[in-house]
Length: 314
Image 1 (cartoon, helix red, strand yellow):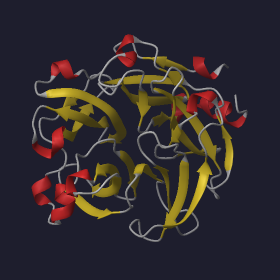
Image 2 (image 1 turned 90 degrees about the vertical axis):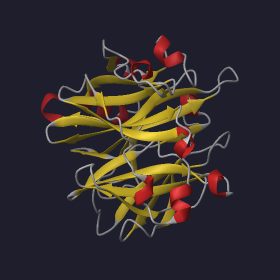
Image 3 (image 1 turned 180 degrees about the vertical axis):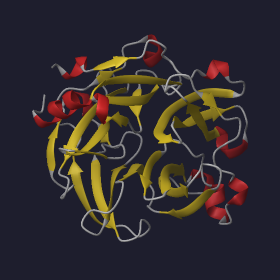
C-alpha cells in the first residue's frame, strides 16, 4: 500500500483545542502512554502565565482515546526540584515517554537560555503514578532535542536515540548507550537527514516500540520547500538485538500537513509526533501528534502496513 494512504485522520480532530482551555494559547506535541486502562498524553502547552517561561506540560486522560480531560495543574512541580539551575531551566515540553520496569521515564528538551547559555539539554524525570514526579538528572549537553529511550536493556545496556541540533542546523538521529540511564556514551550516528525529500533538513526519533520484526520508530522529518518549514511523519525499523543496524525506513512520508488545523497555527505546516501506541491484537497504530504547534490530533492505521513500508522502503 502507498505509505501516504496507511494512516487515517480521526474525524474528531483536533482532539484537544486550546480554545477550550482558558489561559492556554497552544496545546501540542503529545507524548502518549497507557495507564490504568486509560490512554494518557503529556501535552506541551504555551500559556499566558509568565511562570516557567510560558511553556509547560499538562497530563491529559481518556477512557476511549478520543475524548480527553486536560489537568489544570502542570505535571512537574518546579518547587520540588532542589537543584537551582535545573529549577531555572526553560519550560518542560516536547517530552518523550518510555515505560521501563515499574517506572515511566520521560525526557524533556529544556532551554538553557534562562540560565545564561544557549540550546536545550535533555532532562530526565520518572514516576510510577504521575502524581509524584522525580527529577533524575540532566543527561545531555546543549543543542539536544528528541531524546528517546528504549524500553529496557539490550544486551546489558540501556540505549537511546537523539536528534542533536536546533533551529536551522541540519540534524539527524544518533544512538548512544548507558549502564544506568544517567551516564551516556558510545555515541554513534544512526541516520542522516536528506535520504528523502521530506526530511531534507532534519529527521528525529520518538521512543522505539518493540514489534516482532524489531524496533519500530515513528519519526519526524522537516524540509523547506518554499522557504518555510514543513514537517512530516515517517518511520524506521531497527534490529532488535543490534539497534545500531537499520532494517528499513519509509522513503515516503506517512503524513503531511494538509488539513487547515495542521497548516495554520502557532507554527504553520506542522505534523509532529513524540510517540505512538500500538494495539497488536487489532493490528493498529495510534499516532497522536501536534498540529501546527497549536492542537492535538490523532491519525491511526495498520501497524503491519507501516512495518511493511519500512522493510520494503516504500
